[in-house]
Each structure stands twice: as structure tokens, then as C-alpha cells.
Length: 375
Image (tube, rainbow, N blue to C red):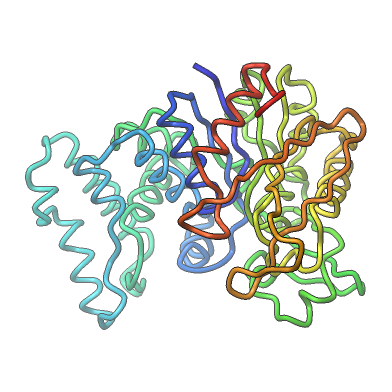
């Protein structure tokens, strides 16, 4: 069983994660710790804990890949209705927190009790003025577990995995709960935090991002999660991507000590190129993206030779083509510094612009097995 560590963002890595699990790989997902948008922002600011949205989403992906579809997973994958009033949304939350949901009623008492304890811990912590509308029940449970375990997100994740029956691991790259991501545009202007960068307008996207910085609220350098360091040290392959380049992927490289740990790991390191350009990479080629990755690897204390392999989607059109509003990412990377470029048709035939999880997973497992010649 190959131990695969995926540094990713949120949904972009989903199909690859699922396919690796279905092929029997031992998968560890490493997700961002600097999310500042949506309901995670409200919970993070109110409770001064790490945002759990990306963690919960990755755990649910892991559950899907492992075929976990039990009652706990169904509860954790539910959301409070978005179209209710404030009071009615709270009543819907209490339908879960008081154990009246049929899935909770039929659970084994110990399991049911643990979930209700975490839901009620969450409710007590956020107060009666918290708006539950469109909130993820899984986020509420995971946050409640984090509060119940004195803010220890690793313990909360461990407990959540046991509740759901999930085997694979999901860890934030840092356990620091106050990380702020900022971006410097090519004209010198700065954008912060993460959700502001993600939602930048077309004008700023055209200017482009030069680099990003990651630091605590007091400008302290982020510290690597010890669970991530352990996973990296034991990995048979480490992959980074796909996902939003500057807000989900490259900031991982700025977490203190992480690049050094990846360099020391005795296994292939793979950069998975995106299928499409996005608002953060408008006008860039894969070569430009790799140059940005090299820059941030150096900023993280490493060298420009961090990735030994690159998965590049083969462009089948001699002209620019778009999916929605975004063009395909041109693949023009050069083999240099010992870096091996593997070009393949990695796009999903049914979901244009997304990765074919099976094709990508197959390529990664071939590389992990030492057979990259036809990956």
C-alpha cells in the first residue's frame, strides 16, 4: 500500500483523493489553515480557533473514497437550510443537537452521545445570537470537538475520523489559528486576507499576483503541524495541487520547516498542474506556474528543485479554448534541474476543466512505484 501525501486546497483535489482511496492507497490530505471566508470566518473570529471548513470537506471526500456512507457521515454532510429565518434555522439546528433527527435516534447510544455533546458544546460556545443558516452540521461537530479538546485541532480531527469510520488522514499544514494570507500584486499593491484575494476583480486579476505571504496576526511565522511532518517523512510520494495556486497551494510552502521536510523525504515529489487558468493565474502558462512554485519554495527555505515530477495536461487544441470564462492552462514546461515532465490527458471527459481522478491517480501510483516512463 503506497503512502500518498496530497497538499491541496478544497474541491479541486476531490476526484484524485477518491480515486487513490479506491485504488487502495494510504492517503493523507494536507489542507489550508488560513481560510478567512464564509461561515468559517464567523466561527474562526468568534471562537479564536482554526477554520475547519476545508478540513471537514476533505474528510467527507475521504469518507466517499473509502465507501463510508453510514449515518454519522450522512449527518456530517448535512447543512441547515439557507432559506429560513434566523429563529427557524436555530430550531433546525436543535433538531440535530437535541437528537431528534431519525439518523441520530437509531445510532448506538455512545456514538449518538458523543455527537450531541459536540453539537451542544458548539452551540454554547457561539452563543444564542449565532446565525445557523446554511451552516454545515459537520463543521459544527468538528468545531465542537475542537472546543471540547481545548482547541487541539489534531485531536478533534482524530475523534471526527473515528466517529465517521474514516481511515485516511486529513491535517491542516499548520495548527496556528491566526494565520493571515496576503498577496502582493505585480504593481506593488497588497490584498489580504485569503477571501479578499480569492474574490479579486478582473482588473486585479489582469495585473496578476507576484507573490504571497503567510504570517500570524502578530507577524509570527507559521509553524508546521507535527502530524504533517510525520506523514511527509513516511511518504512514498508527495504531491502538491491541483487547486487555486496562490490562495490554496503555494502558501503551504511558506509554513516554517515544511519545505525542508519535503526536501528530506526520500520519495518522488510531484506538482500537479491545473487544467484551466483561474482568476489567480490569468495569462500564465504551466512554466510560469512552476516558476511561482520555485519562488515560494525558496521563500520557504528550500531550493528551486523541490518537485522532481510534473503532471501536465496535454492541450489538444492549437488555439485558445475556454471552459466557461477561463482558458486552458498552456502546458509549456521545460525539463530542467532534473525535473521530469509527464504529459497526459488528465482532463475528465465528463466534467470539462476538472481532473480525471482515475487517470491522475494511476500516474501518481506509477511514479510512486518507480515506473514513471509511461505514467
